[in-house]
Image (cartoon, one colour):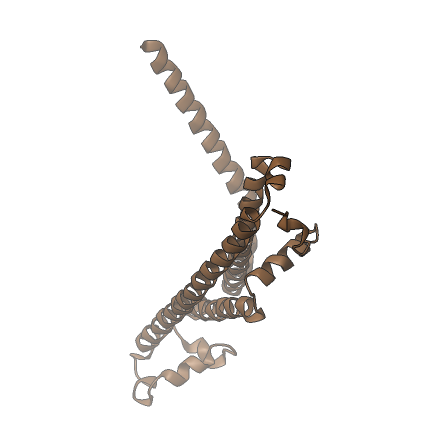
Length: 235
């Protein structure tokens, strides 16, 4: 039996060459990546709209009124949702609170709905990719002749199978990183919109909080070790 590796197309020994090879194996199309990205951006837009509505709520609490909406460039449209029969009454502010809270809930529902749709697509796509990568890898490895297995250690064969499986994990990790980055930008933007000084103070306090938590963790671990040592000696 001949070594099929001699007749199969060579994979360029670079990260890009390996990724291009597996992209051909799974039959990848540009919209396989573009669609999840678009869904993440739409879900982030709903999340941004939902969080941004906290700004007029906090301002209303601070000023004890929604009168500032009449001069607001970004949130003045909320007043258009108030019926004429309510706009001139004392219950207008209470009605606006219900409207804003309702919009926040709608925004969260929209975010979760798009995330669910995106998750369904990604799971189905990744399963198809996994099957095709597995078929190609095992067909290639099992098709190798005896000379290949005499020449290479079993560990190398296991490493090749494991590496092919990790390609899909890299795609999943990259998409998760993109989603988390978009969410972080949205939340950071809303924090700055609510209060820039508080946002700066929060960012500056993160290193101190990290150091403080690490100090507590080390102290707890030291006390736990000392407790185990004392218990061992008493026995």
